[in-house]
Length: 237
Ligand code: SF4
Image (cartoon, rainbow, N blue to C red):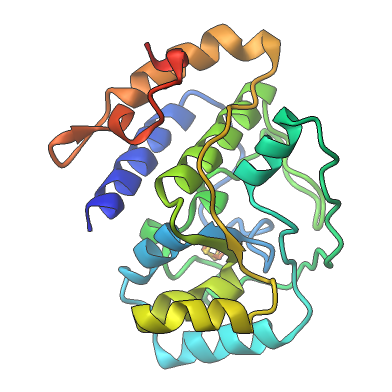
């Protein structure tokens, strides 16, 4: 439960932070709501708190899960660790598809909006996105998004990461059955890992430190978010 509160604190902090960036995204716009969304297990558990996963949604989800869909080759923190070790990063080999996310309703609205994962919160654009095209995001926002992905994986480092389509069944399973489901997923689900380093372009360093200092002071339950990050990050001091 407590980590869900920390996750909520990060989501709330981020929501205030992105208000400082212009965006053309508005209610009903769902070009980025595809079956390419990736999540950690902690975020999946938070999404399931919405209580909206009824039989109809689960059937839609299962139908999409049976189709070819994007499977991340590795986690964000594993990629960061490879960069740090100057190792080659594995290329994404699975298909990027543009099927609509099964959690969209008939009006094009998200059925779990208040509980949506960070991948969805992080998506915004300064100009209208073409279908299948990329969002137009300020570079500093890309830097911050990457750092938040890394922090979310770190605080869920005993958990898992994968496509939302594969992660929801995991979140719905009894805890004791999760390792068997992960094994049965045949590599589609990855193991999270701790934060090895942040990946910050030199030009963003000062602004990034300022952002992190503010984030670190955010409260969840009787704690601050700084307590969840490795002490070695002098970036927080
Ligand atoms: S979870 Fe909601 S916001 Fe995210 S892609 Fe699906 S419909 Fe869109």
